[in-house]
Image (cartoon, rainbow, N blue to C red; front, side, top):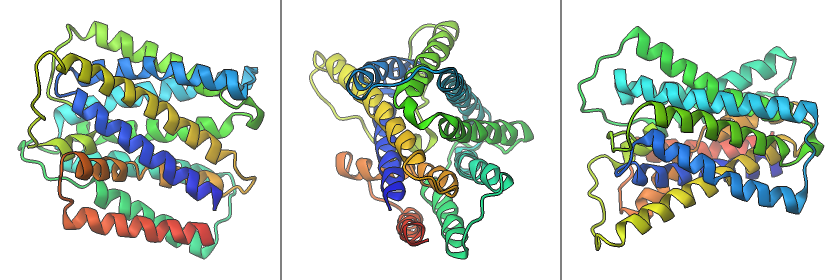
Length: 307
């Protein structure tokens, strides 16, 4: 039960962070927003390091670095995929690979899942596809390059979960700090190399882009917009760091080998947080498909808690 609660909490918070990143990306390039948010996220993790401690052992540093590199590369590949193919296809594909890859690794390691757990995981993956399903009006065509890029990006996101799962339980926040610093360096470098700060039309996440598409930005005094933008990016970075804390805690909340596949699939439900916050803040209405996905996600969560 604790694992499921932490997994769902991490997914919701991550979805909230993506929503805020999407709002900020209306003004700045997505890679710039993500790089700044990653840098901001170092601060709360350092505070957490002071409060709860952490052991920077060789294993913790190694797998923290793997998580940071995997996440940074995955984000960049995701942007590339969305630039060359339809979001309606590539967004769900990325989410499915992010959910399924750790499950396959766990099964390969010999993890035995009950019939109820298998059924719940399958339902959860379907829920991921439905919640992430969006309408695409760009007219972009599906290409082999786009599919491969999206799939590799999904593997990268799944690699974050796998890396955190390999960290020692007593390392606490240490691997998260290492991962966040490396990710900030990678994304910051990409932001600098790719050109001047300017809005490119992308967002921090495909699900976020879908939710925000067609929604007008909230008007306000021009003098307050830079402050709002700064607050939005800072909040995005803090929430994103908190989501990683939930993931790390969930992976080490139980000695059950099934914890890894459960956390990987629940973590992939992050679009729920995005669409929920969009409904509250922007008064966006969920589609029937997304509502179906949310209902299935809740059913899958109950099944995983009982398995």
